Length: 406
Image (tube, rainbow, N blue to C red; front, side, top):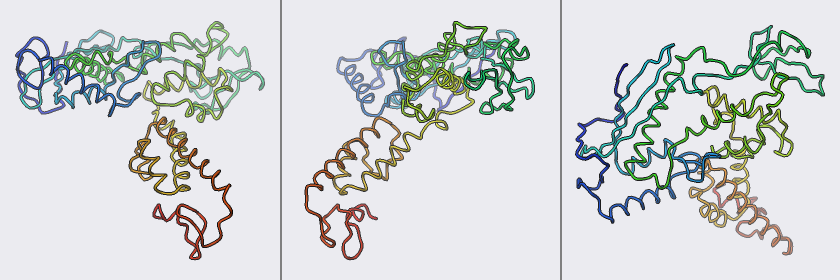
């Protein structure tokens, strides 16, 4: 057994003056009703103003209605109450290079150094998400784990898929070099590669636990469910790649797959754009593809930010185009009312698909309204352009664009 400590902030001596959490507003042993009310109101205000669903907290499919507090949300709460975390880490060797990390996070007041509360968490490489990995069929030629079932309309068989790093060679149904393999869950041969991940997960669990217990935020949140990891494990246990060896197993349905991605700030539209087809046309192969992609995100092989973003980018471009077509004051008013306070110059700072979608819809409705009104008016002669009109004056300018500094 090994022990170590990590202190991400400048440490002070921990003064344990109470056996239960106390207020950071005073060193008294008990809080007044007004102080408790103030703390609850602060957490609610933080939740409604700065916290974003899918980033700071989120609802995990099948885990109840109370949102789970994520690590960024816990860090915001600790920042608001000026609490400094100190990590104490114990390492237990479990044999066969497996480890368990037991973490205690002590919270102190950043100003006084008074001990406020603590949380605990642990993580082990014996947990299924780290101990095992999903193995596929390996190509006898290129040795890549890239074999997939060929589509029936193209003759069936097996294909070493190039999109998975394969060589493209095809095998017929019944080929023993492929079908004699036993894909599925296998022991992770490189378990040491998971040590750092497991350590961080233990620290994360302890930090969230400390934030919930020391601030009384459990009324608003539940303990983080390791968002994606729990979902991926659930999907892995219920679904496998359909094959002659496992005929009863099928691909996850579209609703199941979409539920997690939406909870993780990846809207359905992004998935449709990624697959280049609407959800109504998704096939079991499409949902399996998203499932495999989920495993790769979980294992750190791919990043969501590098895979998705086309839909959000398209919304930003649409908003810019619509705003430029409207009178500047009217466009700015709509943008600000939907949270885009810096105008089109600040669109890159808005990452919420919901906000962007609502903004684009409001601008489109206004553009349609003005278009209908314009169609009822007699044609505007050259040189008689009104503010916001894109009809050029004698000097060739366009007043609507000039309003945006163009």
